[in-house]
Length: 36
Image (cartoon, rainbow, N blue to C red; front, side, top):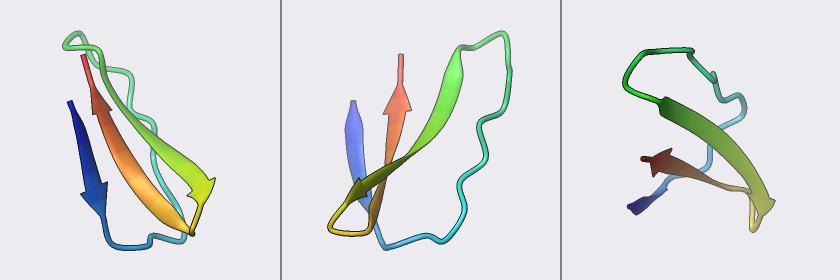
């Protein structure tokens, strides 16, 4: 899934067993959650 979020200055990429990653996309200054 890809959820569009309000612009975020910093994004944390936690290392979890659930493979939950949080990436910052430098497009239109928007951040996206990438959940697998």
